[in-house]
Structure formats: structure tokens, C-alpha cells
Image (cartoon, rainbow, N blue to C red; front, side, top):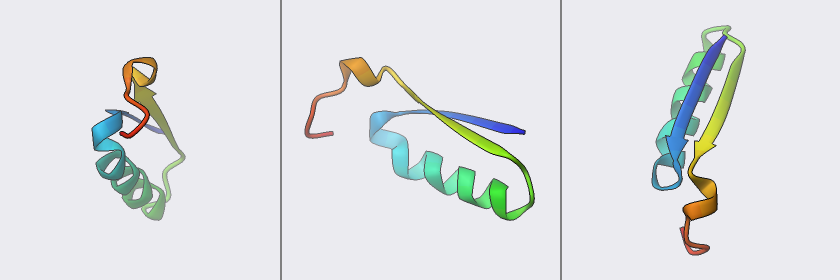
Length: 42
């Protein structure tokens, strides 16, 4: 299993990594770090 963690501004990069890992056959998860501190526009 590939566990990916990223901050709100880097969600696109995290999702790209998850997609590439999943395409290789891995089970994947993503964790958005410090989401409670994110500004709504992010």
C-alpha cells in the first residue's frame, strides 16, 4: 500500500502520485495534512 500525505496547496501533486501508484497496481490512500488550517479559497 502506498500512503500519500500532502498539504492543501499540493493536492494536485498528491493526487497525481496516487494515480500513478494505483496504475502500477498498488492500493493507495491520501491524507490531506493541516486541512483545518487551510483557507477556504485554497
